[in-house]
Image (cartoon, rainbow, N blue to C red):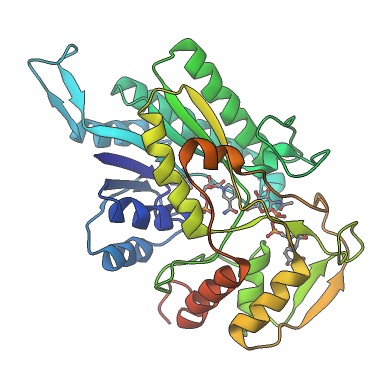
Length: 351
Ligand code: NAD
Ligand code: UD1
């Protein structure tokens, strides 16, 4: 069984490749390496002892994408349309993901995320590959009126990045209305953190990290001097923001569970991938200090524009329908992030 993974060299993609290979899937990665390194895929091969087929391609390049799908398509005398593509499904991670950058560079975000997805869908349609797992985000819930968040909550977004996710969800629903033979899982991730327990792959942001855990990890390793905590006056137990942090390996396992669901012809299905538990920024700092046995210097700073006080999932639908549940704790997440960061202080770059 063969899966095309767009954005497979990235943070979540590389961890999902590990799970796919360990569960017997053949993996074809399509990634332009705009925000990742080939080294990540080499290490996935090393962790699993299995091979990945890799194409360094931008998913907006329709002719290259068609060539890739064509390479897995055989002419068959027996099949109805005389063509059979051996790709069973696509897991679609490729895209840009930084909220602040999306405000400054909306055209890049719409082009990469929307045009990229449209091009991918056109090629999938051309080759009769109609099973798709799409990386959506809890950002599509905006500022929820109540917690925990269920899949049927109203959707709203406040920035171009979030808008691309919501637009793509809508595009995929329209596609299914037009042709019900498409099967599509919209996976709404909460806050992915952590790293593979091997310490060989992990999150490797270019430049100064925007997100909490990579920032803390770089403070712990000495690349940054202190953490700014954005607000301690929220209506939360300790005043700092609360999020549903989910270990990236649990998240990756959710994709492996979504694939067989697609093969039951469910149409469009939506799942929250979170733990169902909220943890505060301050709790994360304390847990990271324990994991690293180092002090994390911090300053209380102003609230960050666009942040909400608290956000956590009701993940029970995924448990009921996919038999998937996150099992790792925040201590596991901090331990594995630290293991990755201390062994690779410069990420995948060798210096
Ligand atoms: P990432 O940046 O590490 O991975 C994305 C990968 O896509 C990178 O390897 C990048 O090189 C590649 N890519 C980008 N544009 C491309 C293009 N046009 N053609 C080919 N490849 C391209 O990000 P990630 O954290 O692994 O996120 C994966 C997906 O999950 C993204 O769609 C993101 O929006 C979504 N998501 C991430 C989070 C998170 O916190 N990390 C949360 C919710 C949703
Ligand atoms: C952010 C994005 C969201 C995206 C998600 C995953 C914003 C507003 N939202 O979510 O759309 O889906 O990343 O990529 O950017 N914090 C600090 N100091 C820091 C960094 C963060 O105190 O240096 C706090 C934040 O205020 C927040 C919490 O840590 O309360 C988590 O922040 P972050 O990791 O950036 O994730 P989100 O904002 O939840």
